[in-house]
Length: 209
Image (tube, rainbow, N blue to C red):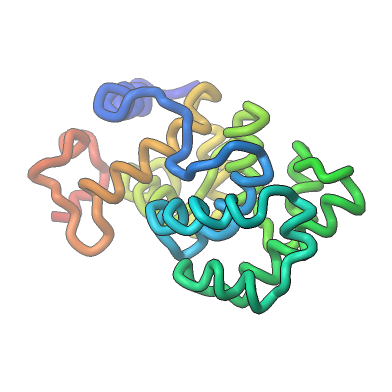
């Protein structure tokens, strides 16, 4: 059961950012979202969207990615960073999907996390946005700001995920991540939070400014 304070925080987030569940990554299929999410690690969504705009024209199917030349794919996604591992994992995951899942992206957490380079964060993005399976994605923004708001004192992403599931109502599990990412980029910035502009400043548990 969410507390009165938690409901107040969520209401303010809803008021400022709306309840649009769509992630900021551009995609037209579950596979494209999986690739984009894998590429988004340590990279901005804006940069990933620039790369995938041309990437998904060149590689149109899971099979196209499975047959891709590693060096060529590395060159194609070079600007997203960590391109060696990302390219290797994308090709490996495409092959696994063809071999084990008939080329389809699975919906179960354990199946998703068995794919190359896919952890709980990426899996939960897919589960929430493709399969409408309520989940909480714990990225750096969610980890940092959830601590500042007093929702958790944990530092391990998986432990934070389970703690947030206890304090947040299920209809906000997916939404919370999307809202907090925007909030973390625009207001509650890691290095210098803009507390004077923060609509949560009166109920923030950590007065960082």
